[in-house]
Length: 274
Image (cartoon, rainbow, N blue to C red; front, side):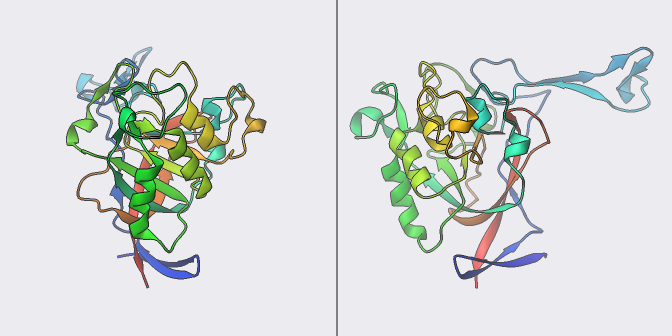
């Protein structure tokens, strides 16, 4: 056991750093994997150059694979404001590392035609929204601290998300405009979702929730116009049913890619008080 003691908002807290809870989807290059926007599955193949073959099963001296993937579509990934701007802002420059106090909430999405929250463009009646009302209701049971990160598990939750192919105009729940605003008002800098996008898959390029969360006005394309340039969104995570709602330290692990998004490995460390 490796216990770290720390203070947040004047409260003494502790976390066992020896027992992390992974919430990334393992990416199986040779088997079932999640997908979005009809992107081709991620693949890997042995490097072949000159007389070298990067596969010990084929007589090579070692294994050396060439990997092809689309970070935004082929599994758990973390993105930054550069996802929406002409400026090539990278996630490696935006996310400096470190632990973030996080609150995990399980939320039941609501059909757009039976709630008073919306998005841009107006959702279709059958669309499912992650609402500000649901987030506020879930957070009521965990008052007393101000989280830096929020992890959202949408219900119902099933293991088939590990390999679900999301296609069509609205294949999964997404954030309402009000929900994104609620996150900003509460100072959430890092958002983790178990859906493929914070926004509707087909939304005429508006990306309403992304823009609200990154503090980027509608139509703005310059990173300098963002009021929240250090914010990040992680999508296509999977939070196992055995992981309880409540307080955690979040470690967002990414490779140092100079791109707007990168595959990521978010880890949760349960926090206890006292």
